[in-house]
Image (cartoon, rainbow, N blue to C red):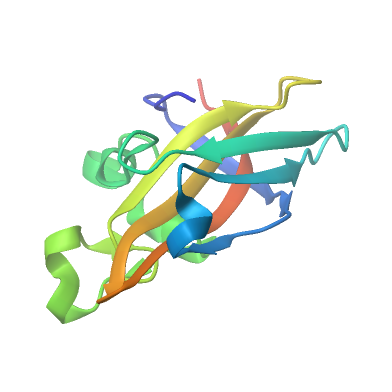
Length: 139
């Protein structure tokens, strides 16, 4: 799990086993798998609340890694509703949104995972993985 600081281009979305977790499914972590687009290897990802991920703002701020338009066109995030803008301009399900980079453990293809985590309503804590996308670094 690492942050991404170089400009990238999104290739394609990987198939993910489970993307929505609520309440006790998140304790102590949310675990799922994704299938590599190149070699079909099944890779495990584990998201630990309040420990995993980096703010999605780091990706689109000053177009450092990806532009807002690229994030929106690939349906990685959506525009945040007016009442939730304190979480940032772009979110997943109007909740605090994070990302991390990971590699296929077999062929080492690079992937970005984007997810949101927070209390959706009193008594309902949700972790939603927007998806896992294969990416290439640009020179």
